[in-house]
Image 1 (cartoon, helix red, strand yellow):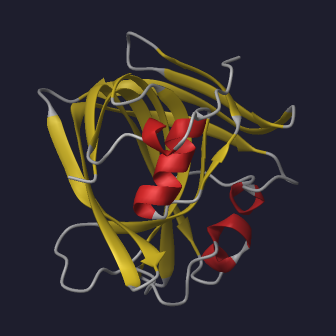
Image 2 (cartoon, rainbow, N blue to C red):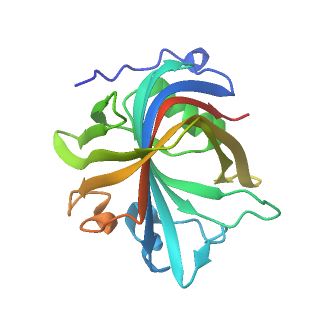
Amino acid sequence: MQQIDEPEGESAVPVAPWRLQGAACLSLWRLPPAEPELGVLALDPALPLFTFAGNAFVATIWAKYTGGTLSYDELAVAVLVRGKGLLVPAASVTAIWVDDAVSAEGGRRLWNIPKALASFETSSEADHGFVGRMTLDGQSIAQLRFEPKTLLPGRHELSGFVIQTGKGGPLRTRCAVNGKLCTGRARWEFAGAGPLAPLHGRKPLVSFSIGNMDAAFGV
């Protein structure tokens, strides 16, 4: 169990962009359009929901950052949205937890991302497997086990925008990830009475892990 450190003041928050290295697992979920409005999946009405074939889409990203600007674990939930004039994917982070107070403060202050603190046990494996457990106040909220299947050749880059509600309107932040992609099966478990209950008992559409990852946020 990692210890959660408290920030030592505003100077402790690194300036953008943040460049991070590590590994992650991402899953995409399909939900009826009304359901992302529930609980921590609530989307600001000012942000237009992206839908396709009558469905809305939610991404869950579990990351373990081991180097770069900061080192910390993270579980994020992002609802896909339609960004005006954008030709690349866009999402709004509606719930996110980290185990580092500097990261939490920086996310809120720099990009209006609602980072909260939690405790994590996360490990990324040499064969591109990924295992994680997140707890709040000693209660298990989310667990993940990613079983790798096919490692895609070469390195791949994914980029897009995170769009959050800002004081003067939508706040767009560009992010990019580069790494080795591996398809596989992600077994997620969410507490039925926890903040991620809307995903309890569901299965993701698609999942993959990202190994040897270089990520940039706020570029």
